[in-house]
Every structure is written in structure tokens, then in C-alpha cells.
Image (cartoon, rainbow, N blue to C red):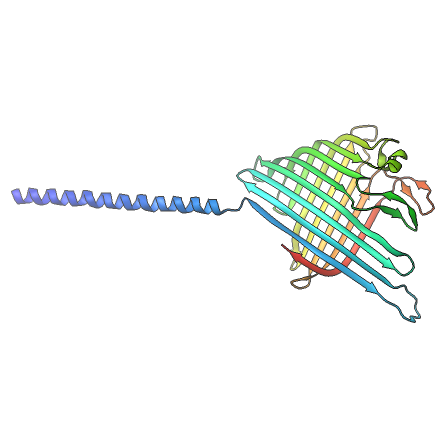
Length: 309
């Protein structure tokens, strides 16, 4: 009996020690898993950066060509990039688009063919998986003077004449990662004409002699960026604005589309279209006569070197 009691005591002690060893092993495993998860979280990038820059070039040359024609060279440089922040329920998107192009012909010499400075920043706080409370700011203007060719003696635009800025708060709906629909009932739109000669004639909708115009209104912005097929990317942005004043119902439209078609690692074909309508911008013909507002449209097609980063 004494030996049985001693054996029972030893067995109980061994089971207790084994149980503690197993428990400690589980604790160590759980601790290791937590440490790994924390390490993975630390490694997760809060900022991501991406973009594309390139140079398109086209050339035409004619020698004793019976069909007629004019020697020409055209080039266009562009840079499209973005910085994107993600953490918990916060999403902050920053995009910039720069472009400048020139065209040379034997008869007319060098002329500007494209000119763009465009920046936008949008912060969103997730209300649901697809709906964000958002604030948005954007700005756009151009680099150099613009002329209404063939009259190249008087410029009709320049840097910050015009310049446009938007500040807005609203709701951003993102059903998929490639699509954003932002709507705001409270948006400020600001027009700058920082040039005496242009402001004195009331260009771009500012009052004569004024260099600044502010409007409050409703604003919608639809942005789409996705690969629609292998090596083909579509980046589209449509902006609509109407002011809460006597012009209410007249919609300012700005729609830009960039289609990039990758040929190989460095060679890309691009198609860029811009459609604009603003009731405040009058149309001036080649004779200098002023007419009512019209739809503005520009299209650029080019093949050249491109680099994605």
C-alpha cells in the first residue's frame, strides 16, 4: 500500500509537470504567432508610389512629293504619378499630371501643342467598406503662354491665367478599387487670372479688372483607372460643377482620358483626349471676333518611350 501511494504521488507529479510543459509550449507558440503578426504589420507599407513618364515623337519629311505636304516634327513629354496612403480607415490619394508638347512645321515654325499642370489630393475616412467621408482639393493651370494661331502677336493665356482651384467636402463611393464616385453639395471653385491684360478684358469669367473669382456650388467627380485588357490601361476623370448663383444649371465640364498601350518594356502608344465646357469662357475665332461659349476638345496620339515606376 505504501509503495502504491508513492507511485501514485510520483505519477501525479509527472502529469502536473507535463501539463505545465504543454501549457508553456502553447504560450510560446501563441507568443511567436503574435510577434510574427506584429512584424508583418510593421512591414506593411503605408505609402505606395506609382506613375509613368514618357516622351512621344513624330516626324514627317517630303522631298519632291507630288501629293503635297509639309515637313514637320512634333514632340510631347508627360509625367503622371501618384502617392497613396492607407492605414486603418484612412485613405489619402495624391495625383499629379504634367505635360508639355511642341510642333514644328516648315511654314509656321515652332508652336505649342499641349500644356498642362494638374494636381489633386483627396482624403477619405471609411464609413463602410465602400463609402468614405471625404475632402478633396485640386489645382490646374499651364506652363507657358498660349496663342490663337495664326495670330501669335497677342497671347490669350499663360501661367495662372487661367488657374483653377477646387476645395470640396462630400461622400466618396468606391464600389471597386478602380472606380471612385465623389459627390459634394458644398464645393468652392476659384478662378485666377493673374495677368493685367487678360483680367482687364474679363477673360475666363472674372469681372473686368479683377484677377480672382470665387463660386460656391455642387460638384461631382468620377475617376476610373484600370487595365481593361493585357497591356492596355485606361485612366479617366470626369468633373462636373454648377454654381449656386444666377448661372445655376450651367454645368462646367472637364473630362480627361488617357489610354496607354504598352508595346514592350519601354515603348508605349498613348491616346490623350480632353473635353471641356465652361459657360464663362467665350470663343474667339481666328479673326479676333468673340462668340458664345463652345465645347473645347483636344486629342493627342503618340508613340514613344515610356517608363513606369
